[in-house]
Image 1: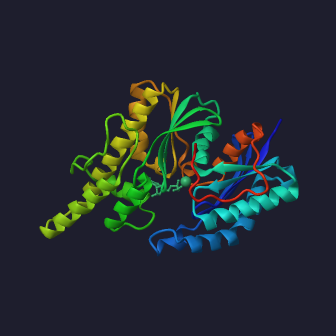
Image 2: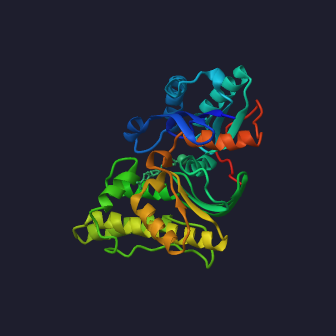
Image 3: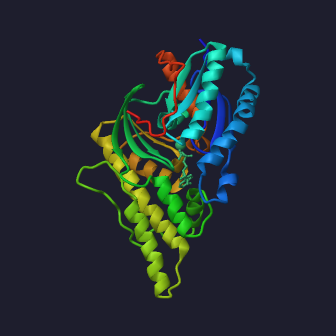
Length: 336
Ligand code: KG4
Ligand code: ZN
């Protein structure tokens, strides 16, 4: 049977709608980004994000349906991100999805934003061997998740302070790069030496799969301050490359250790920071060494989009895991 799911994602600053067939074939994936609007504030302003989601949601859904060549009536269900994220932003997507699903009398699937990021990997590789270990690295999260099967998740480790993407964005800002800093910092790092400065790696207690990036951020700030106080010239590319290397070392080291410990049959690298080429190539290299297949979505599916939400919703649809009409938005929804 052919299953068409409409996905809706409005958890942060992207209004997105997508139509996905059978949890795999992306018929459309429309992403209206507000980056240009928030850039002048150096970050996402929640109130402004909500307002733009309100303006965008109708046209974005209509465009997604149009590009997919389907009508509302053709859909089998609607999947929506209900958390975590900015509550006002989430509410726009949740309210729209509830209203549409109720009017159509079609099933509604509530999708955790991070589950969506994991399912981005299933969009490109449906026959992904399970159990898997997934590293989810985004602007708001850094989590190592064990996925025994669809619907069976266990958190192995999380960040204790900043998320990896947040660390990239904050360090980028002190290096004078525009928001969002992650991609800009990666670009700057390409011209630098990753061994130039020995920044700390927070491995934490023996055996811990948690992360911590705030000490590293402080080390970068201190390095820049001390150089300025001494009147020394700072090679910003070296700082960017050395910082990136410190983040990548820990992310890769702990992911490989988690996969080894859980005897995973595949490793998934997902979330906005998974767009980082240095992270991708180092993860690939280390996974290859232990014969572990690595799956990472193409760059446009790493960052926030509704196709990944539709894909996660498809698996919930198959399990008849439907949300009720009183579904709410949860800004700090736990994953497992
Ligand atoms: O998953 P995402 O689109 O949104 C959240 O759910 O947070 O992730 C956005 C984050 C931002 O912090 C951004 O700076 C970071 O991902 N990012 C990157 C790169 N591209 C995006 N960080 C490092 N290198 C990149 N190439
Ligand atoms: Zn995200």
